[in-house]
Structure formats: structure tokens, C-alpha cells
Image (tube, rainbow, N blue to C red; front, top):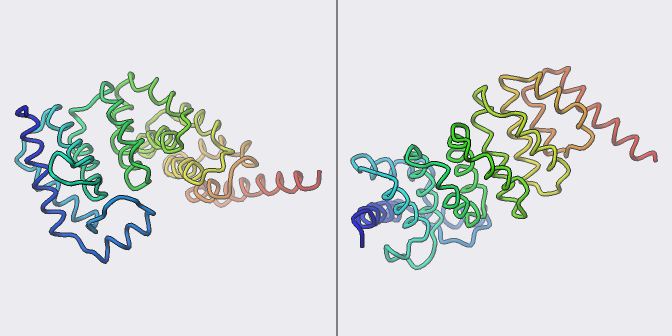
Length: 259
């Protein structure tokens, strides 16, 4: 075993032991039911998981190799003696990656994509896409073809990731609105709830700082948007903009129904 793997596995064992100690069987059952999860659950809340990760990494010297080895050991924990994937360990892996993302770049897109494909739940996909891929893609142009490919992927979790990668930059008044809206426009009429919600979520957060831009893009497309998307979009728009969008959607439905 390499030095990096040995260090990573030692850290993973510490994190696993602490999470197991903080777990609750009652919470585990509730979380598993809520997420419709097939993974093992220890029943640890997000704040406790974050505290465990922060403590474990406080004095650790992470480089790229140790980071990837640690995330792998938490994601698929057979190397540290755990027989099946554990949701809480995968959640910890996303936090490790988020905290140490400065060590990652476009060369790690295959690694991140594999985790996203295996995640199968918004509770893991969203932090990986929004908190890791998004910030990395904003400053590394080599992510551009990756996001383009993801936007047309057959897996809706990967398409959702392509959308949510734009969330933080747009939320903070930056970001590539043209690319996001191009992706969103192609997915606007999808039936999948998690796609509809993601489009609305990103537009809602963009509207916090640029409501007019969101309104102008949405108005000619209101008739195509789902109720799930529209309910998110209008939250930070002016009453007049909200009424105009809802009227455009309602008018279009009325005309469609009269044909």
C-alpha cells in the first residue's frame, strides 16, 4: 500500500468510527425512508458529519492523491473493512472533496462523474454538482465540454448536475447565464421532477441579484415551464413580474385547451 493510501485509509477509519458513534438507529430509519435509500445509514445529521470531517482533516496534510484515496475509501469503504456503501460515509466524502477541492481540476472530471452516477440521490448529487463541480468549472475552461456532454446524458442525475453546476456562480452575481439557459431550454419540458426543480432553483437564485434577466428569459417560455419550475422562478421577482409570468402560463394553457 502506498503512503497516500495508508494515510487516506487511516483518516477514513477515524471518520467512520466517529460517525458510527454519533449515529442514531431511529434517525437512520427515518433518513433511509425519506431518501428512499438502499444504502446503509448510520443516522448522523449534516452538522455532526461536517464536524467529524472538519476535525479529522484539521491537522491532515492533503494532496491530490490523498484526497482522492480518502474520498474513494469513504465512498466505497471495503478497504477499511465495511462491507456495504454507507450513506453517511458518502456524505462525508462529499464534504471532504468540497473542503479540499483546490486540489482538483478538470482532470478529475471522470472521478467526479463516477461519484455522481453512483450517488442516485439529491442529497449526494447536489453538493457534488453545486459545491464542487460548479466552482471548479467556473475557473477551468476544460470543464466546458464535460458540462456540454452532461447536459445531454441519458441519466437525469447527470443532466441535473450540468444544471446545478451553474448555481453558485449565478447566485453570486457571476456565472454563465447563456450556457445555463441553453441547457435549461432544452430540458424545460421534461417530466422528471428533479430536472424541473433544478431549473427553477437556479433561476430563483439568479433572480436574487438579476430579476430582470430571469424575467426576460422566462416570459416567452412560461407556457412551456412546469408548475414546479414556475413556483421557484417567481419567488424573488417583483409582484408585477410574477403576475406577468403566471398570466403568460395561464393564457397559453387556456388557448391550448380551446383547440
